[in-house]
Image (cartoon, rainbow, N blue to C red; front, side, top):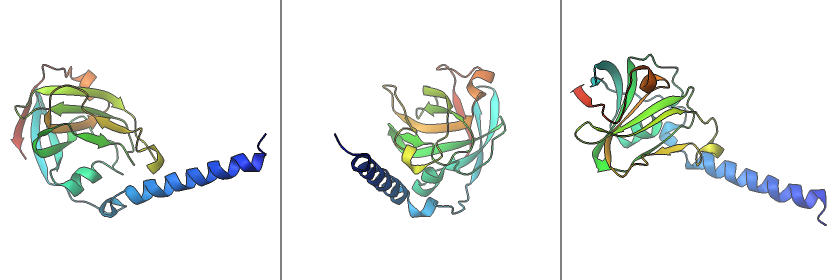
Length: 164
């Protein structure tokens, strides 16, 4: 039977390696660095939102990290050059989100509600969210958790870009 030390040392070593790997995997341009996001206006059904625009890779990686709660008329829209199956991570988020994936025509392809934040790099694998539908998305909207329920957003909802 292994001794207590023979069990604790490998577990501690594995946790240390995973932690260091997680921290090193965070791109350097998102580590506590301020990122300026352009702003725009969109409409989901009849609900107008002022959005931060994440349209470059550094902006998409940073996302809403470290930001405070959003009002129901605010959000962040992730804009991709072409449609695909994109995922988002919830690292360093301060509040839960509703996430809505839209195709290039602005039709909802997938919705995930009340996605909890993850607070450490060790959780990045478990706190990544992916479009689980069969349809590709071009836009992803992050809004405060409860938005989808409060405004009745569904697979029949439509995104209209006013200015981004």
